[in-house]
Image (cartoon, rainbow, N blue to C red):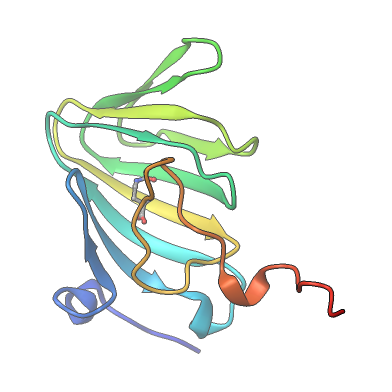
Length: 136
Ligand code: 9YT
């Protein structure tokens, strides 16, 4: 069994900061469950474009107000405490935080550690999980 409290993660290498968000990674690949679990704060007044082409993500809002826009259709959904969205199609999207949003995020495959978004709005694939190059 793993028991871990947010206060023991804050300020460690599991506490990852980016321009618009702060992600506290309670479970990572090394914990061996096959998914990662994050307590993430999206800063108030920000917009973040993301497209997780190498991962699936589910997000459950527990604090704050904002919206998510699906860029393929322009459809926007309000986000408030109790709203969940799941990116089951590697969806290109923009997350807007009207107030600070506190989100519980689950990634499959799990993040490995201190990943932040690349210029494409994605986390890189886990190098250990990448298909092996054929040997000549
Ligand atoms: C909702 C979302 O994807 N925010 C960006 C941060 C990410 N979820 C993370 O690593 O916690």
